[in-house]
Image 1 (tube, rainbow, N blue to C red):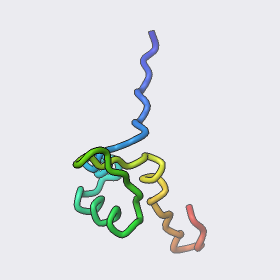
Image 2: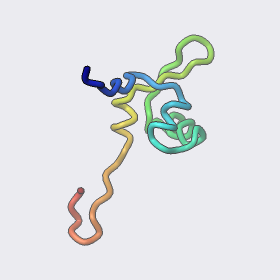
Image 3: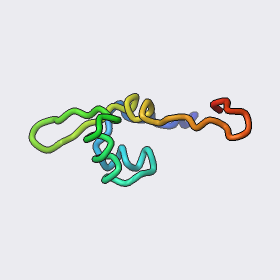
Amino acid sequence: AKLTQPAAPEYFGKSAAATYLGVSIDTIDRRIADGTIPAARLGKKKILIRRADLDAALRPIPSAKTGVVA
């Protein structure tokens, strides 16, 4: 049988979002607060963030030599 990788979840909690991006939970909190990363509240405590919104929050850095985004 062929092993397959499980698909990344569609929604992340703050801790999982921080792990996914390789940043701290405080960074996730700041990006939610400044609107860079949209989030939704589920119930009184749970915060959910769409994977697509995490991916969209990443900004490409232009190449220093060419000015072209890699």
